[in-house]
Image: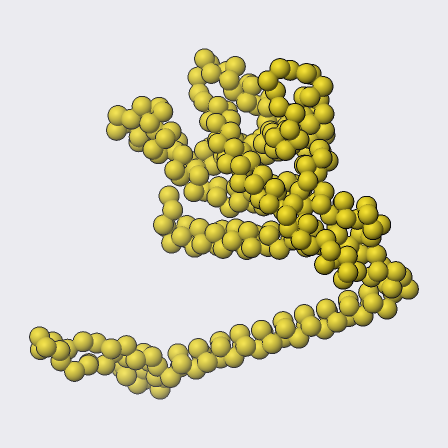
Length: 309
């Protein structure tokens, strides 16, 4: 116990000499004080109490909502129409087969969106009057496709492009629907990348140029690595939205998870297949959302510790 601890009567953290090692030196072992141990015990007790209260309140809230729904006047009809186990079992295999198309669209369109969005963002951040036409085109592109609803873009591409009867242009609804997704989402992703590029302090560019790096080298080796790290969370959020919106290609006739559910529902006049398709998309989205939250928290911790420039 230290002199201050002895004077106040409060136990303090202490260092204890451990037995000498092979080299004859002693090592200091940390011994937490009784006060610290008591604080840690209280913190653990509070955490357990908070967890128990959260669990109880969640259970009570869920029970109240469940009773309110099942005791409503139209619950029996709603259960038969939207939560029929027979039609759910019938629709699930077909919905899962269609889901493969959604996953392929997510993989291909996601990669294309990232590449095109980055190129548009770079075009918007180019400096000098000679690049004004390129900046203007990139700005017009982002403004137009960010303002155009995705459904309208899909209809225009899926039905408008084949109507032109251009030789060599595909009429495959999957390719046309994927093109519409890329056109729309690349505008959103371009703004995310542009925000990351502009968040890099100008001193970084100045330092790189003073070291002899050219403009493209500065952008590639100094600006873009910092910008991309800073915008990873919003990029993942855009990919989560893209995953859900791949179901919109069903309006073009592509048999994905949504269209497969629509086929089963049209045969039975029961809407349970739509619920099954929705739950499948939710099951895919939740892990990606939690991964995005984890990445965001991890980057915030590293930034707070000075690990990210």
